[in-house]
Amino acid sequence: MNSVFLKPRISEKTYELSNKSVYVFEVPKMLSKQLIADSVESQFKVSVENVRVMNIPQKSKRLIRNQGKKVSYGIKSGFKKAYVTLKKGDTIAVFASDEEKKSTPEAKVKRGKK
Image (cartoon, rainbow, N blue to C red; front, top):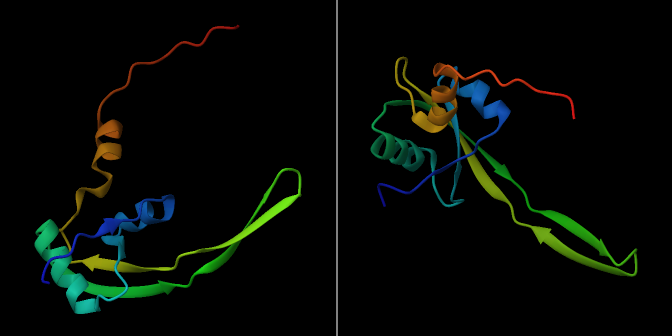
């Protein structure tokens, strides 16, 4: 179990952290910090400096339908996320498509009145 597929969490906060060489992944709850580091190194061919993990607990959820006549309850499953710090100079192309859009010149669009 040296390599496990890790799902990157993409948000505005993680985008800002990626500029500081910190990437956030959603990982299976059974993985330890060492297994997470090994998986990132093998999957993305980078050097990991530090791994911090956070367990997000499950939360109850309520859904109201038909103007308050029917209420159903459920549970949002919890998960584990890992903040992985890479060595200086290493990057992961999680936000590559966003960076490519910024680097290419875009045509200016004229907007007319409707």
